[in-house]
Structures are given as structure tokens and as C-alpha cells.
Image 1 (cartoon, rainbow, N blue to C red):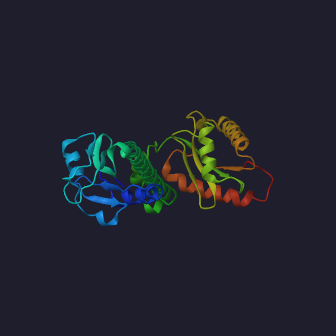
Image 2: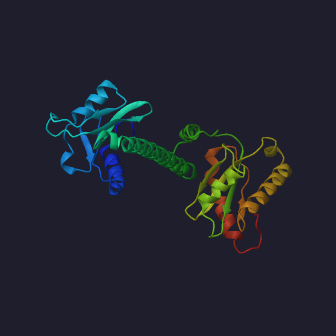
Image 3: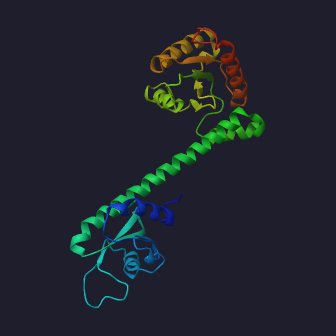
Length: 276
């Protein structure tokens, strides 16, 4: 959801949560001065002159004092701009004697702006996760993407498609959520930015871990490095088992490595070895 426009859904959702705890009427107006959410349903869809004036003049506050000559429908209160990234995208107004509701109006303004920022971050994370899910699908199902397209998609996701990587499948006990396990690996510096990591439908952790160029030329050096890494993983994820496939240097072959890992898991599940 783009936050450069104050959405009706977001404004109404915010007010529904907040309104249960506040007695005063609260109005939320869009950039055109139209009330899009209010504790007084009859006000929704009507024009709010003071709010529109505040937006046009870029004023920091619009106060409506109690007088005998207020226009029809206009009530005393305080109106404040709703800002996002330095831009005014709407107005929040609290009805009541200005001196009594000014502090409340500022509190609601800040709460709404924070609510919007959190929703924006949540939406960005959802978009990133959706992009990662599409990437993993193409990575493990090469029929869905041409080789050159897979390389380009890998680059767009921020990964180098031809760096040597070691395929690992980490099974975790039921007490450990795979996503929590992935976060723990990152916290313990056991995952770099070039490591391609995801959870699988079987609740395992699949990793294509970046390997040193020299390791790819020395089987013994690579094996020692992998064993050391597996020990570190099992130290922080007790009860986990690690399956390792041969090092790969092209994302177009990762689907074959994944199949090899699944075969290893099926074949060694009944053994006591923790590293296959």
C-alpha cells in the first residue's frame, strides 16, 4: 500500500482501534478536505473547510474557537496536518474546546503517523518476501525460467549468480521454527548477505552458503570448512541435522543440488550421523 495517499481503509482501521478509548469526536480528512473516517458516521464523505484550508496554506495547526457565528456544520476544535516523508497527506481533527483537546490532537496525529509508518514497513516486508518466494520457486524449478532470466533475477535479488556456494539442508527439531532458525543464523554471523537462504515446505532450512574461491579448488579445505560450519550451526540450533551437497558455482544447477540434498535426507534419516 503506497502511503503517499491516505487510504480510507487505513484511516478507518486506525480510528476503529482508537475510538473505543476516546470520548471526543475525531475526524480524518484526505488531501481534498473530505472526511474519510470519523467517530460520527454522518460526517464521512462531507467537506471540511478548515482542513482543506490547512492543507492549502501548509499551516502547522488550524484552531477553531467557540464563537456564535460558526458556519453550519463547523464545530470548535483543533486540526493538525498528517505528514509522511515531509509531505502533508491529510488532516486529523479533534472536536472540543481547543485549549482542552490540543494535546490530545497532537497525540492522535503522532499515533496515526507512526501507525502509517509501521504499515508501510509491513507492506515492504511482505513485498520483499513475495519477491523472495518467486525467486526461490524459479531457482528450484528451472523449467519456469530460462537460464539467462534466472541469472538476471538472481542479480535483481542482490545475489551474484556465479559465486561458488555450498548447498546445505538443515533440519531442525519441532521446537525450533525454521524462520526463527534463519534469524538466529544471521544473528550469530552464520549467514552472509550472499548466502541464499529459505525455509522449505517440510520446515527445513535450505541454504546455498557462499564459499571461498580457494575452497572450490581444494576438496579437503572445503570439507574442513563445511565441518566447522556445521558444528557452529548445531551449537546454536541444538538437535539439528545438516546435509551437504557438492559445491556449485552456477544458480542454474541449484535445483539439482536440492534434489541431492533431499535424497541424502531420505537416505540418512534413520542413521545417527548428524552430518551427511
